[in-house]
Length: 156
Image 1: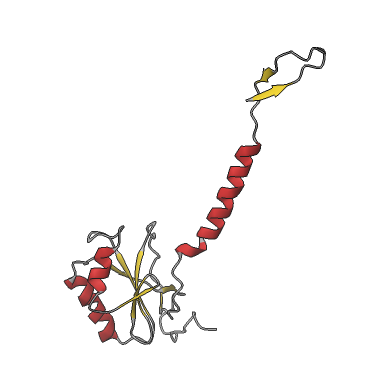
Image 2: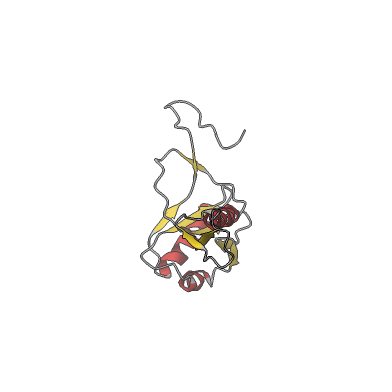
């Protein structure tokens, strides 16, 4: 609530009169604090494991709000998001996630040097744990014309 002093009344006992204007300074302060919080939190919501993904020319699909990434690194270790996990505890670790359910998609990222058998082994672990909705993650590539040698657009 704001008040103003009356300029024309010199009486010291006069009551302060209320003003009916909105003070926007606290609102601006709150908005700036929220902006800083979102600027700091936004980079933390991405997965930053160094995985050399293969490329694909498939049409990109819409990504959900909170995807769950399972990554297979080049040394064949597994991670959920950025947290390392063993093969025996993969399904149990996924079950322990608060926002993960058996009906949600698991996004599987694998380094390009990972053998196909290892990739299929992790997919089998996911399936045996009840996670049958698996999407493979790749880099977006350039379509190759028929008869042309396949170039790797992800490497310079």
